[in-house]
Image (cartoon, rainbow over all chains, first blue to last red):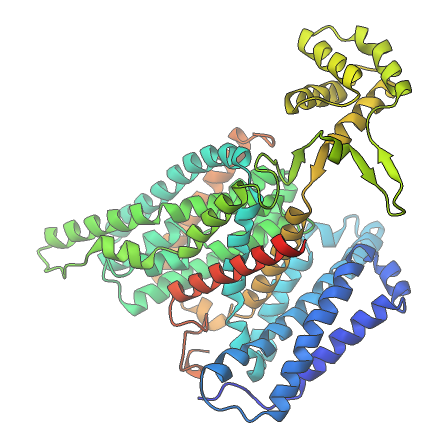
Length: 532
Length: 39
């Protein structure tokens, strides 16, 4: 089978992207950019426009001029056109529809009494997924792009692995304890509940087993992993996947709206989405939809999601034992399956990739190992003495006048550790340690000094905190990988796949899914503080 | 889309999830190396 289609569209897409990048770079789009307030995207409009447009032009020419033959080159190269198609949709949504909808939402507010774009959470992530769903179900994905759409899951998995580079031990230790506790309760609880209801309603053991894994752990991949040990039939797997998809897609759109309505913070929402949403891809979609301008929520949600994937081996072994006992009790012969072998062959390796990337990052190659959310402490001369663009040296030590301001106010501080930290700061003209920095931050937040004194402390704190450039770059890249993956994911949500859901599996899956979503919401609201 | 492809599945171009995971890992490592050397 030859996958490359003779078409002009990849070339057209490439020309559009390059032309847009050129127009932005030359300033011809300045009025539109100002109107849509998208100035912060100018850098990526130019870089990504030229990069993807250039590749699309080359591939477009190849599509038109080459005579591809069946083989690996044809198979893999034919995916590029689909990638460009997804990226074009992503560009239009992120740089055009998202800001336009925001503008209309604000303009319609006086008439409607509310900002519809904000209430309906119409940001680029949600609209990107909706655009994908509309494309596949209303217009159909063009034939030349179909092969590339099948790369969207690769984009999501790559994004998750790269995400590993953004965590520090401190963050992981904080979130890890909470996630193991919550996921432990809700994964084991929902698997148990599906098994209980399935048995009560006399569902076949194979159906109950595969549904419990899908609803309890991480969706489609967990259902596929558990299928061999409960000897699930293709139809039972299809029922489970349909249920998970239907429930997952609803959650992906509803969770962010509810989260905003309840005024949840990033950590609370990430914990809730990572626990309550059934399928991994939809967890990422909901987290980014909740916080489209950053990835803090995504980071929290993925820790929870990865924790529940780590529960997969336990669940598969549990189901193997449960299934054999149930079948033997019914005096039916059971075909022996090596559960350990299933665990090893089906365990999602990208989770280990995430851990590998975290360990790699922990060596300090992307940011100092003790960084927290990409920011780190450095009070060395190299960090405090910098040169500006003209080559002029900037001295970030406190000036004598600032030291004098500080010394006048030290008397206001009564706590010994705070006083000592300020004395060290005044004496050395810089914050001397990470512990002193934490103390200084406390004094700033407490507004214990005058406005001038607080300004001196704020400056002293700011000059010893640095953002790692590599971590910032990772953030940008990860956001694009997820955007690509989620738009492509939308193009894979067909009505046909959702219609597979039905009957008792849909009822049981929905009951347990709702209990899990509501239960985890209550736990998060009661127990998870925004700062942990 | 199942019938349209004689390789992979409707969701992926790779023959199995394991292949896809390994490709994602390779891609992530390449990107990490580029960030390390170029940024």
